[in-house]
Length: 427
Image 1 (cartoon, rainbow, N blue to C red):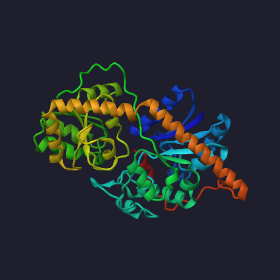
Image 2: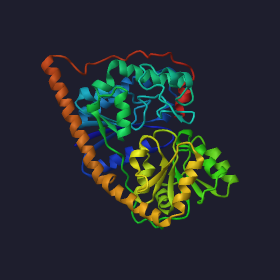
Image 3: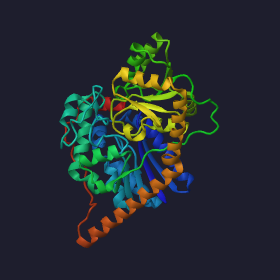
Image 4: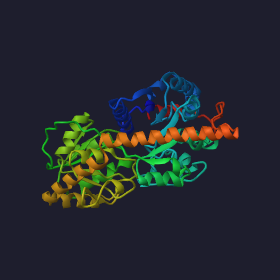
């Protein structure tokens, strides 16, 4: 199959970038012809604020480039990961007119929440879900803690809702969990276009670390929605049986480094190479995922399963689906340091149970999250998308109504403010 894979990289690498790279590698390993179209946010440098703000809503130049790629490479499916802010949702209709079916992976909740996390001030927030215009996010500055950048984000989403872009020009949406699918359906995406396909991982071979060591491990972005502050409070104010190692970086890196410098039971390791992260996960007694938001799909949970390490996670959102309590891991109350420590202490006190959980976690990985299984799921989604596009265009010909007519660039639905691009540059 000929596949175009599109992704806008943020300045700071994250899980979406890893999924993009691994799905491209997966498709190529099975002999598919893969064409990548990527943009990076460092392209902001030297461009005018007005142009960048307008393109975040509707990037005509990028849409034209994508359409040309589809025609030149005989693309059957265009698979989008992140379109914000340099690709824009204008790319959907462009590639569809050029002949490709359109698939969009919903890595986060950005279509429902300008902040993308359904979380504000360390708590779950659904104030914008179901609203035609997400005023709460604009008022609170939920994207990048900026009202102006949040307004541009909201303007892009509202514009494409009004144009029917998501409903008319995307053939299949990939939701990463049943929880996420239900949220997007409740917000208006058609259920028949929402398909569940979890992420997968490709663990390195010949890991040297012995399994089931004597420490707890956190791996992830160091930001409020990941539960960093409750995590630090757990090891500062309570009595966990295991020391804590923290891997990652992000806006709360300095806070973590400072706290670890004062606490001998805590070690901050910063960002590490992927293989070293797997070695650390395999060597941990337990991986902790104390997120205070719903999460899209925490890859670290599957990485832990792949090497046989049980997981303690917040009883919240998609994490409830991924972990079987008492079998592959355990739950704690989101945002509650004492609850987290209690769960850690229970597992630390029972090495035999921990080993049993690790074996069950490995079995779960083999059943659900291997590259082989994911390839089959991904091809099924692509086949559905191709059939959807064919049926839609056949119906449009029979009725004489075009479902993908050319549209000029729409006007933005909010004024462009001077500091929008400055806020977006650091995303």
